[in-house]
Image (tube, rainbow, N blue to C red):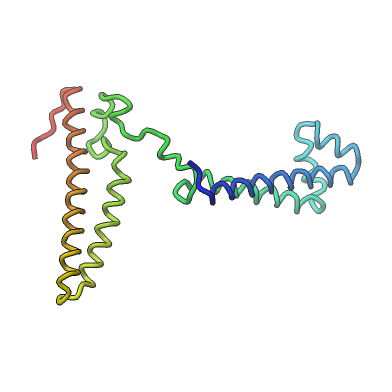
Length: 181
């Protein structure tokens, strides 16, 4: 699902591309009707025209480039409100094929949990900072922080248990038996 900033960026990028293209066509027709027709209908004539009439068409070209960069920003930066392509691709190897999950190292078996682990790491840093800033006389704050730490520990245990369950589930497929911990 696209967010509003991404939709606006796409719309502005497409608008700039269309404006730049029309501007370049107008410049080609201003130079001569033959150049304008070639620009429209002859392959690579637009590229030749770009070099021949650079002084006249460079502003239209840069408007096009800015539009393309706006579109690329949406497609290449999914964590900045774009398409979130990483969520569309199945990263959990156990979903692809159970035997494939065993063929890779244990660290790569549960790639889909990487996002959850990153979020937990961020929470841990936040909790550590709050603990360091906590006043020793603030009992209510200490209780609230303790409850949040316990919730964090439960969430972390759930993720690690899920990863371990996936490893042991995938292990018998190829006769791989991980060493017990």
